[in-house]
Amino acid sequence: AIVRHPNAPGVHGAKRRRAGSEYGVQLKEKQRMKRSYGLRETQFRKYFEMARKKKSVTSTVLAQLLEIRLDSVVFRLGFVESRSQAKQAVGHGHFMVNNIRVDIPSYQVKPGDIVSIRNQSATNALFKDLKATIKKYEPPAWLLINKDQLKGEIKRMPEFEEIEMPFDLHLIIEFYSK
Image 1: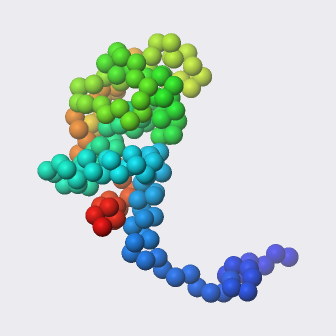
Image 2 (image 1 turned 120 degrees about the vertical axis):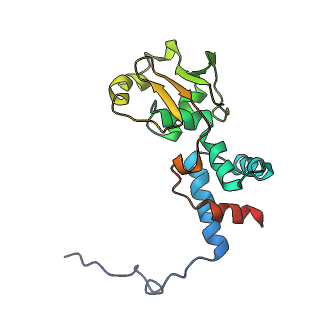
């Protein structure tokens, strides 16, 4: 029968894997966050530089900048199931901000902006079961959603405590501060 061995096969399988260096740990954390938001290195670095130039705490501003992107807001409102799906749907022009069609996923929404699905896109297969699934969904406190009209409003900027961040932002800040 099949026997499970505690190490990898081959001559070098019994060697222990070393712990990552400080730089390696920071790099991995940055890569995780970057991939989670679907950003390229140049774009992510620009967000970091914008956050660093603000007079507030860099990690808080970075988290806010990433969360108020249109694709992240669409995801947080529950209109789509994932960030990558949100990025694609926004890029295809399925969403409107203040009754103006926006097809730029990195568009920064502001408090008071209203995000809605275009009338022409409402019949799309992507939004077929949305009314049923959104009934059970509860958005973050900084967003307000009208579940009948499928519109969402940005009430205010998200607080750091309200943002679900499974990342260690301090490692990312240290990585870019070198």
